[in-house]
Amino acid sequence: MSSKVNVMNVVDGISVIDSEYYSKDFAAIYLLKQKNKVIIIETGTNYSVPYVKEALSQIGLSFSDVLYVIPTHVHLDHAGGAGLLMMQCQNAALVVHPRGARHLIDPSKLVAGAKAVYGENKFKEYYGEIFPIDANRVIQADDNFILDFDGRELRFIDTPGHARHHFCIWDKATKSMFTGDTFGISYRDLDHQDELYILPSTSPVQFDPEALIQSINRIMEFKPERVCLTHFSAIKPTKKATNKLIESIHFVSNLAIKYADKNDSESIIYKKMMDYFLEGLNEIGFQNNDYAKDRLSLDVLINTQGLIYWQKNS
Image 1 (cartoon, rainbow, N blue to C red):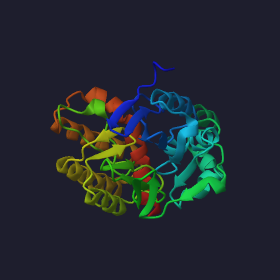
Image 2 (cartoon, rainbow, N blue to C red):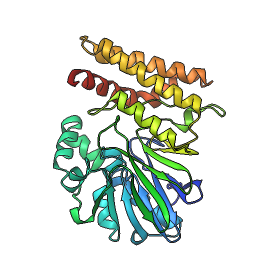
Image 3 (cartoon, one colour):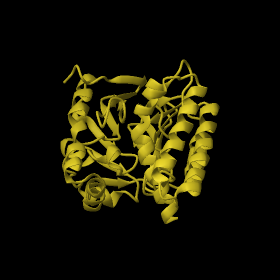
């Protein structure tokens, strides 16, 4: 396994690994190291837990050195492995948004919802069994909650828009913001020279465009040197890329408003959104449209479903 786990250094005190969920470099897990203790931000799925174990070993630590496990929100690509990970990390507390805590303490509704989407067999293939977490080991982090990680201050900020149970985490020491899905999706293999492209994540069922834009603006008030995306890895949030991200939220929202009630709404919105993202990639010089289409296909599909749900339920 050691040859498979690539522990990538982000900045001193932060490293990142691939959770191996869905495809290569799709969903990240971050390790924050302070002296001989560690925090895990995002858990991936149950199948990610052995990779976390190996990554900890590579930085000279083990599960017993984990003080906190922190999913940014309770969508299963971010929190699916939390229960199993907490079983392994006996000295750890779980830190979660107050709106998400009950779903990790008793994951039955979370599981039922996901099985309704994926079906029983696909659910097991993607996530395995979701284990409940003892409520006594759960810390609910309200807006501006501060966690003292052995003298290293982590501030939690409430960031709705992608989901109402979403927070971001500000690491003051490194000027890094862990943004989950709030600051969108940006893949390193789609970068071109020094330029990158970020697309929004509008997945079901709590997309709220105005709240999302407010959350992005709030993140930028911290003047982060880097934003650590779950999909995928750390980027420098340039003004150009950030403005384009906000513009794209308006664009996809307008698509939903215009087409969500059409008979073939999903195919129309999917195609127009994909074309828009490809155009954005072309603008930064990334020209391999076939590769980009394949890379973004799942994100565009989930985004489309979220947009339609938003319009039909708003």
